[in-house]
Image (cartoon, rainbow, N blue to C red; front, top):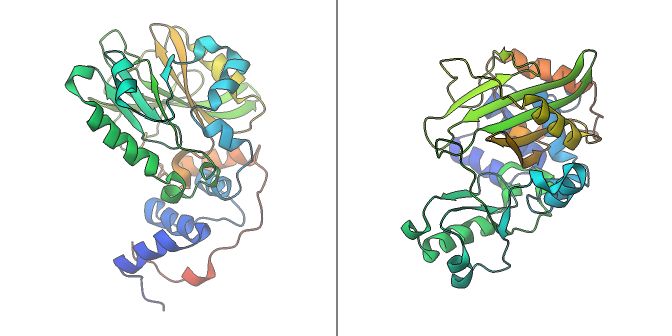
Length: 309
């Protein structure tokens, strides 16, 4: 029997190995089993295939700046968060011209967000160092989602959205599985108070809570009321997803006004552990209805023994 890879060797293999090996081992480490890349069964299996075989237009629609044109044409510019600036170079003059509060973001990956409630409590140098670190990051290398490779890193600044309590509005993460016999099949993760007392809940299209955890977020202890404009939220997400197959549409809802967040074609990068695990298979069955198989893939032969994780 092959010996498990030691921690350092495992990390080297992950960092320097080909994309297929990286994703295969990452899935084993995060989800607890090796994926079925040859004949996808679970949701994560299909997402891994998407990471390796992305559609060409995903790059533009994943770019958080470039996608604004698509959104404006598809549903109207009123759904876009107002853009303050997207400078080629972040300078002191750009910083000085920013309003007292704003959100600083980068366009080429996830997690590049800095919330500034009061500009007087930060500095140009502090934000520039953070921006430089973001722009130097190769997001594709972190998760091997290949459609991120061609996105040119850009910095941009948006109006800061706040709810009635002065908090960042909840993330509305809508998994769009197309049409079923009784209407659209949508499973929506609601992540509330992401920068404070975070909570995560999942609902179906009729706002019935689903027995599913949202990542590491604890579930709400009390009922989460359905937004009064839920029908509009569903309509906006459905129109944005039209013709694109499965994807996740992220929105915000502020005082009854809907704002676009982003489009995600490979949520969780194929290494998202579901709790309970059966949902991975149930969502995989939904994806099978609408997902073409993308290229011939076999398990990496070089790593076919037990793997230390």
